[in-house]
Amino acid sequence: MEKALAGVRVLDLTRVLAGPYASMILGDLGADIVKIENTQGGDDSRSFGPFVNGESVYFISLNRNKKSLSLNLKSEEGKAIFLQLVKEADIVLENFRPGTMEKLGLGYEELEKVNPGLVYAATSGFGHTGPYSQKAAYDLIVQGMGGIMSLTGEPEGPPTRVGASVGDITSGLFTTIGILAALNKRKETGLGQKVDVSMLDCQVAILENAIARYAVSGSSPKPTGNRHPSITPFSVFKATDGYVVVAAGNDTLWQKWCYTVGREDLAQDPRFKTNGNRTDNWDALEPLMSEVMSQKGVEDWLTILEEAGIPASPINDVAKVVEHPQVVARDMIVHQEHPVAGSIMMPGIPIKLSKNPGSIDTPAPTLGEHNEAILKGLGYTEEDLIRLEEAGVIVGNAVLNK
Image 1 (cartoon, rainbow, N blue to C red):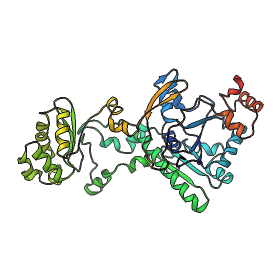
Image 2: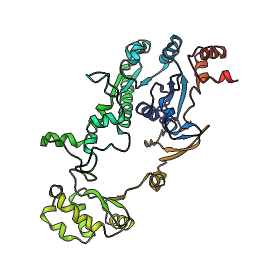
Image 3: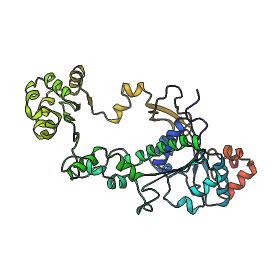
Image 4: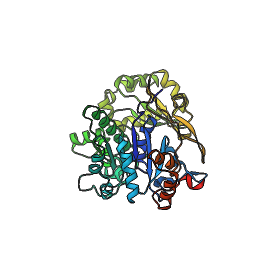
């Protein structure tokens, strides 16, 4: 069965997380990804732990379904090879600091001349315009600057980083959306365009109701711990042997909770009658609910609340997540064989297409693993490949080891 993005050709110049996450999604859905890596060790994340048999599992988890071409883009012959590939590409994806590709003579304006239908996607810390465009950024920088850390953590506690790298991952997701939008428009116009995605922009975009609350109140929202700032009860409670999430997201569910746990009096209490009342009076409600929830174990509560139709869940650690029956049933944990590292566990594909599903077919490549296949496809001979490697234009050429 052909995948949804079969036939889409991507030149992926990205490294570390934001860009590789975007190209991973495209590759999972069938795009042909040629990962172009520098000749000085390739993607930076090849040196990030944890390691198995000397191979970075960090790198392996983000670079499946990709081919690796090592290429020195500072050399004239390296640029010439790249431009040959651009002629037949649909997408160029990069996450350099703005201006880097232009200094190489390979910015969008130049590549558009070579291939007018090219979609050029650039992910950077602050985007290609604005006073911060030349500043470097990492996930932690944009989490701090973008406001999300000011909302995360316990009340009166210090700012807290979100556990996953949401600065990088959200920009990877938005970049993928931008690419697909540009590809769709190209069907009508025949022309590509530049997709400019800023990590900071993406953090602002996911502030959700925090900006709405600021717009109404004039005050910056503060951390609220594990509870929702506008929906109550929507929080975490300590049981006898762990923690339980209770998400009674409307007045009907609140009434059910009260009658299910034997606290009908709370259902009639005017302080807690509506969601607005409960949110305004959380300081009074929280200890009352906590006292109730502290009387039973996690599994007991999950059974009781589920039977009553009240949304609830445990707080699973990663070990429990990877074994969760729903996660397993949806193929969200897969094991892939890497030629050096062996069997590696990684997340599966969250996008389930009914007619053209994605799949994980090939492991992350070693540096320059596909030099020979790609360059021979451009007409280079074995002698040419040897010459290119000796000149430092490529590395990792298997021909030299024959």
